[in-house]
Length: 333
Length: 272
Image 1 (cartoon, helix red, strand yellow):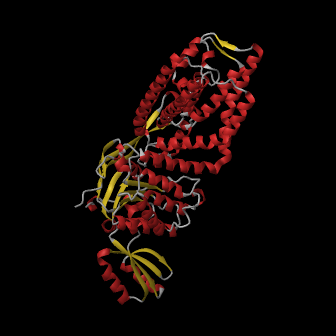
Image 2 (cartoon, each protein chain N blue to C red):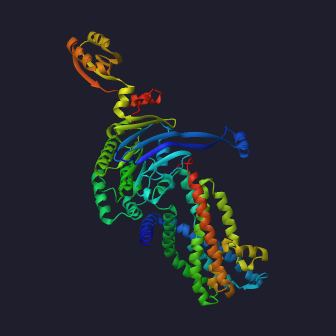
Image 3 (cartoon, rainbow over the protein chains, first blue to last red):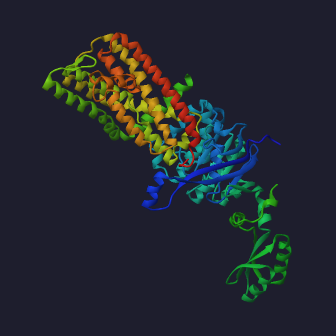
C-alpha cells in the first residue's frame, strides 16, 4: 500500500464564540461581562488518503468539512490531534508543503478582480517558481481542458461565476499540486459548467495522479468522481468507505418503476413491493436488493407491464439517512 | 535573490496594471497627501508673517518662512514615499476571510502587500512630480544647508519607508485578535502626527515633547530624513540618528514576527 498523503489522527477544532442576548441591555452588560461558548467544529476525526485517490468529504452545513480542509491546507491551527499532509504538519505552513498543495474554495477567490486572470497566473508562476516551459505546457493543457480560450484576457470582474470558477481552478493547478482540496468547487454554477468542472477534475487526477479531497453539496459531483466517501456530522466521523457499500448498507433496496396497462394492474403490482409513489398507471416500488431480479421476472411474466426500469435509490436520500443517525458504523472498512 | 526579484517584478507588474484601472481614485489618494503639509505650512507661514522667524527655545533653532516651506515641501514628498495603510486593508481581509487565498501561497503576504505599496508610489509619484516641482517654484523654499547632508537623506528615507512599513504591518496583524483595529490605528496616527514632526518641526517643540519625539520610532520614520535633507541635523547626531532607525527597525521586525506567530493561530472564527 502506498504511503498516505493525507493523515489525520483524532483531529479537533474548537471555536470560542462570544455570545449575548439581543437588545441594548444585554449589549451594555456584555461590555463588562462577556460570555463565551465553545463550539466543537471538529471532534476527533481520523482518516488517511493514499496518493491518487479522489475522496468525497460529505456532511451537512456546519458538519466541520471546511474547517477540516482548512486545517489540512494550513490555514487553521487545530485545538488537538495530529495531521500530516505529504508528511508535513500543515499548520507549520512550510514552503515545501504549500508549494505542493492547493485549496479551491467556491466562495473565495485568489484572482485579482480588476485585471485579466493571466496577470494573476504570471504572479503565481513567480511565487511557485514554475519553469517557463512547464508553465506554458500546463497552461495549454488547462486552456484545452477547461475551455479557457478567450477568458484569460478579460478582467475577472467581467466573467460569469462559472467562467471565474474555471479560472480559479486553473490558477490553483498551475503549479501541479500533488494534493488538491476542493471545497464546493461547483457552488452556484449551472449544470453544464458543473459537468465540465467534474470532468476536468477527473482528467486532472488521471493525468497527474493528484490526490483529491472534495466537498460538495451536489451529489452528482461525488458519484461521478469518488469511489470512496467520508461522511462527517457535527464534527464526528460517521462513515469512511466505499460509496456503493454505503448505499448497500443504508438503503439495501432498489426502486422498480412500472408503467402498467390498466389501473387494475397497478393495484396488483402494489403487492410486489413497498409503494413509494403512484401516479395514474405509473407506480414506483421499493424492493429488497437481493430479491430484485426475482420480483422483476415475476412482474413481467404475471402482469401487463408496458415499461419497467430498475434504479438505485438517489444518493441524496442515502446520505440524508446517514445524517439522520442511521447506523453506519458497521460499514466502516 | 533572483527569486525575490522575480516575485517583486511580477507583483509590481500586476499591481500597476490593477492601479491603472482606477486612475481617478489613485489621483485622489495622491492629492490627499498634499493637504496636511500645505495646511501646516500655511499656519507656520502666517506665524512668521506676524512674528518674523520663529526660534525653538529648547533647541535654539530658528525657522524662517522659507525654512518652513522647505521643511513641509520635503515632508510632503518624503511623507508620500514612506506612507503605508496596511492596517486598514489587513483588518478588512481578516474580517471577510479574503486573507485565506493569500495564506495558501508559499509566500508571506507582506511581500505582495509591499509590492502593492511600491507600485502605488511609482504610479502616483510620476503623476505628482510636476505638481511638486510647481510648488517648489511657487513657494521658494530655503536651499539645503549642506549638500552632503541632502545625499545622506536618501538612505535615511529608504530606512524610514521600510521602518514605517514594518511598524504599520505589525499594527495590522493585531487584526487577528480584534477586527476593530481602526481604533488602535487612529491612536497610532495621532502620535505619528506630533512625534514624527508632521505638524511642527521637532526642534520647535517644548523640551519634553521634543525629547520624547527624538527617541520615539516616529521621528526615525518621519522627520529624520527631512531634517537631513535640510541639513539641520548636527553632524554629531547623524550617526546616532541612523542607529536609532536601525534599532527601531529591529524592534519592529521582532514585534511583527511575534505578533504574526501568535496571530496566525488566532485566525479562525472570523471568516477564514
